Image (cartoon, rainbow, N blue to C red):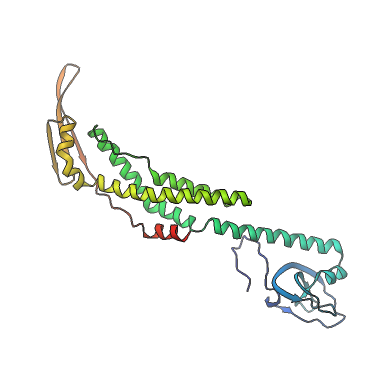
Length: 271
């Protein structure tokens, strides 16, 4: 059977002889009531009307008086109606064939992209943002700590969105090559981003910060320092407008879990 497409997609019938209500032979002298949509058969089929049963792939359905449909080649179609009518049916078929080919190309270009975007938005980007925020806060408390890097996965997410948008455009051969090159760059960014994310999750883990806490606090000039569990407290005496005040900072280091990357890696390998 012809491939079933989404309801809003026009499709091309590629197996006209197997469609419901289609008859393959018509009694001589019976003329169709009207011509219906065109088809483009994957194999050669025969016209149901002419004596020689002309073999063809591109034709149209003819509605018979009893409500059934028959296969009709170009010459018989012109004989039953006129060249203008047949030309209109064939142009509509050509348009639908072109659209079907465009959808086929788009599916190849978009292979795995919607699924990857879903994983990014649900699992990866929130964790990357949290890691970035924690690093930002730790750098504020410990100015000598410089660990923040550009959120690589957010950049890769933007690349996936660009591919998604481009696949909806008319794709020329040159444009397809551009998108495929873009996919390679995005894949590289994803792989690098996953490595950086895993490193970042480890770097800001409470255990890692606890192991470096005293050195970080002393390096930042704190005079008092204490870390219990995930909560750290640092403080120092400071002068401000002639007053001698003790300034204290308390921060709870969140425990961040690295998301499972099995599915995103599988999608990248399959692409």
